[in-house]
Image 1 (cartoon, one colour):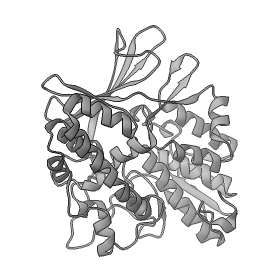
Image 2 (cartoon, helix red, strand yellow):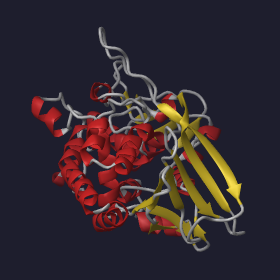
Image 3 (tube, one colour):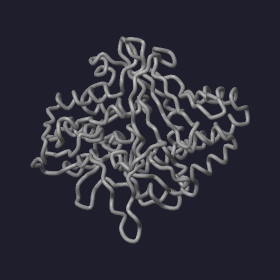
Image 4 (cartoon, helix red, strand yellow):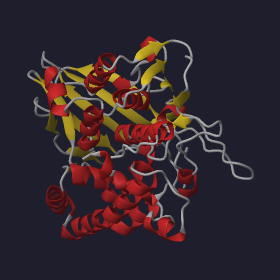
Length: 390
């Protein structure tokens, strides 16, 4: 098999290296050892799409449950996110359709619940289109039908107006901030994040003592790299081909402007004397009381205190590590493709899926499938039945 250099110890880099090594390639991860998973402490502490993580570990040679259990961990369902508003309302949005409908009906009335449920129901078709345009398949040239399926003429502001309820409107607009933009023209397709959470629920890691940091899952992945004999070099290595896992700004081409780095939140960690909820769970709060949201994950500690990891979108800075700013549908279409102009493969937060951790893992999978097929002629995508992949 070929020698492949994976450049960057990002989540996408770790995921790609693990998959390539299991596929039989000699893999060199080019990064400073201290940079391997370096931003893992900034990860959201609640997971979506657990199937993505299960598939990643399985494609690195281990069953997910077996591997996390070996590390003393398990994946458990997380409680509802608590949305806080200036008028004192607290709205809990659990990770299931019926639970959300009940919660919104109780807090905001039946009509508001119906409009919210209808919007996310319609977003299922949007999600299916997104899956085939950059998440599970490389993004094709977008036809008129593709654009319609992706709600290209709508913005988050349009959807916020549609729900006709100011609290739910704030929840929708906050999705733009969390994706890396404060633009009122943020594409409506970002509503898919709420659909994903409602469809696949909310999850957290725990051990026998209680909830643990999301970074522990990165530790599991790093351990897989050692098992698969992935070498880690601090400089570029000689290789047959390279996969870049560090986010880059793809050239848009004249006369279009290049995409901009995402607006990254100020990330903070503080310890508090008490935990604001059930000590068996990480509590997520989304504070909508000011001009931009503050998302905080409260993790109980063994001594009764709570460690709060917050993403403060009131104070942002442009940071390519958080991906590219989706300030319009057109900007979303300018995100990076599987291959660079130099003919190298790429997967990162600047890929089509965006800056969600599960999207970064999916970007790595896409790049690996394409690279492996290029080198061997063999299609190892899960939908290739002839390859025996299920």
